[in-house]
Image (cartoon, rainbow, N blue to C red; front, side, top):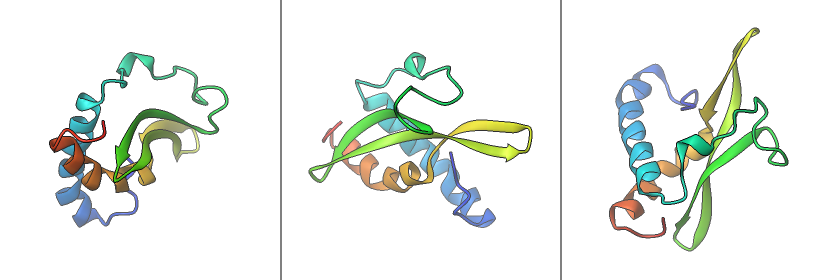
Length: 102
């Protein structure tokens, strides 16, 4: 998860909560299948630099959880859930608790 927008102290507290919320959303999303995530380093063709892995409704709006390639060091890149996806988790998790929109 891309938590670079959070301070070190916030990461320690919020990181585990966000990880649980992400797990809950992915587990409750009938369309998500971990095995369907592209093995291509640039994601699924035609999607830009990332890959949408789950879609859900939040207050009538369609949102996406997406992965993006992040360069950690000059010789190392990884897939992470984007910071925009992470910002959606608290609200989306509330709707998932109620069984709404997933």
